Length: 436
Image 1 (cartoon, rainbow, N blue to C red):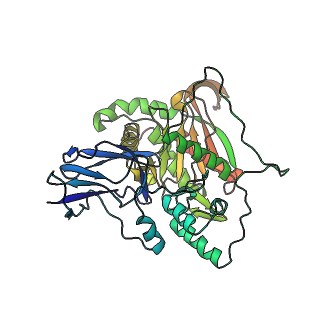
Image 2 (image 1 turned 90 degrees about the vertical axis):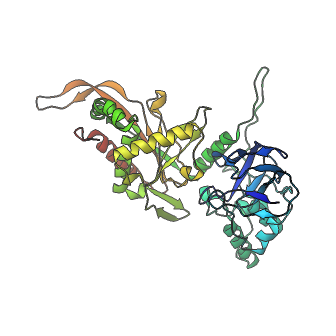
């Protein structure tokens, strides 16, 4: 008899763990090949793990809500459907991939702890992985000390390498006592306390779902991280509106998909980012990372009211047809919760569309660790003054307001203004004779 070990798969290049949100099968259930057995979550993406074999589910190693490292065994399937075997079948590489053995003695000890053991660590407004918290507890690192570590991971998360380096520096006497209080202080020195919120009679109280909590934390972190400046620019979209009206039926018939304004915005933005590469960057302390790739995130509203940002990788290398297909594919799969974790990572610049809700414009919040975000307003017909050889005249034009929020640590007003103006220029000078 043989058993199959189901492991937490590697879900993305920088993802080291996932949360088990719901078991779809229970111990004792008969499993068919490709049956979904568990729902998992990483950052903003929810996924299902299918079974690559059929048999009987005999053991669940984790409970709902547990955070599980990549490569950990999460369940056992008896291939003979009877149970009681110790002979394990190797995991298929094309379905699941086990991580290599831990590199450090500390990590080996942590991962060898009982699966149901809960890490007792003080609460923090900053996210720390179970491995980082375990190392901190083992090395007697306080929460205040942990909060001072500059993270090198995604969204400035503290990685194993960061905390182990901190431990070495602390032992060598290179770390000063933590001087940052966990609670912010006003200039007068008094602690700034959060306002007391009370519920009135008839008020409804409900807890944010997991995604909304992540969004809330990310937005607050962004405003604390970057000094935001927002600029606005009027854009005449008449040429683009007329061109799209002319080709949309032909495009649908030829490509089997609709062409929206979004791929046109992405195309103009990527051209401007190539002209002003410092807007396609990140800030790490006093270092600036100028990105080689142009990966455009497009903020997408979900049916439940939450927001997700799928990323168009190497957007500057795609033509308009390629962008249109990619935009439609990512948007559709985002709304149906079918995105892969890698498809919401690696963005270097983000576009958000306020206009889809009929709004004229908005001041977006930067998607860290990027340094700028472009807001798209709704397109409206407006009377505009136009210059002509015979003098000025008033005409009805399709107008739109672009907004650019940028990180003033690295993007000054002149750079932000020139970039925004360049995007507008590419839109207004759109070639209406181009074929697709």
